[in-house]
Image 1 (tube, rainbow, N blue to C red):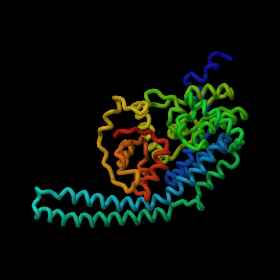
Image 2 (image 1 turned 135 degrees about the vertical axis):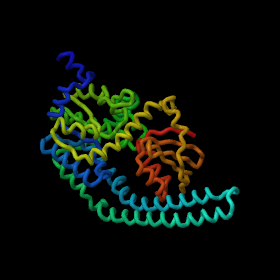
Image 3 (image 1 turned 90 degrees about the vertical axis):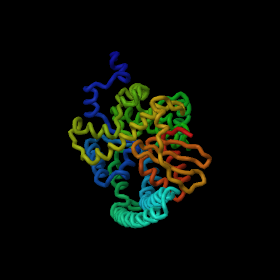
Image 4 (image 1 turned 180 degrees about the vertical axis):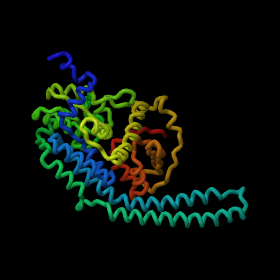
Length: 402
């Protein structure tokens, strides 16, 4: 074996390497890519399923058992139920927004420097404005109901699930035995303690099935490659540094440790793409054109990933360094919520920052949180429970700022 072959895991990916990978490697998709089917428009979801089926026809598609298990679990617990509840939460949020704007405007015209006549005049205009806003909100609510009736997916009537089942029917891996899983969990404890990728960023998750989920996926990919003799292209939206080698916050392929372990175990090659990069490269390397709408919807994820990368550059061990410090002092408007844990919630729509103030006075910022998560949080019947389930356990980076 030449020195170049021995250290292939450490060398940059050449154009020749890249072409060979796209010509011969198997494509493996992470759980988040499948769950995106429920978050995208129906047209984009069908487009992505078309791409998966094209790879299947070429006999270059495979899915680890753990990925499909996580897909089914999260689909039921979070995505489908979340979609159903989001329609009602949207309507509730609209009502709360109207009320908050009305109160804000009323408060702004209550002052000792305004004469009673001017105050009365402004209040009269406010009534007309409020009636107009309520009419617009009513129209939006009607449209929300139409969308729900036309596109809503239920646990019992789910065309996406049927498509995914058909696509991966004969190209999915087998489960590990309980004995094998226990051995992986035991190995994971020592790997995570030494920050050996992947998955060590999930070390605080519970139960073990969630804590070591990424490691199980990795082991199943390794075993598949060794058994079948194929190199692997892994497509994921996971942006954490326990998968990616990063410089200045930018991804530069999988971590060297992953490439080395893969090469030693399988004698094959391993590479990774974000979902957006995978779609962008398809026309050049596979000759497959991708619908622009799918690419545009996927581009929203890039903003989140960049914010997460920027935060990782600016935050170390819970402390804010100079490059990120100014963000702390940018005011984020809050909305009061009825909760035994949370006092108020704010959101920065430009930077995807969720800011929570707790009953005890502590203030935390959570980074890379989608807008819809914020809207669902403020509209939830129990915001504290929603926060615990979706935000606190959602792999979002956070810091305490007050």
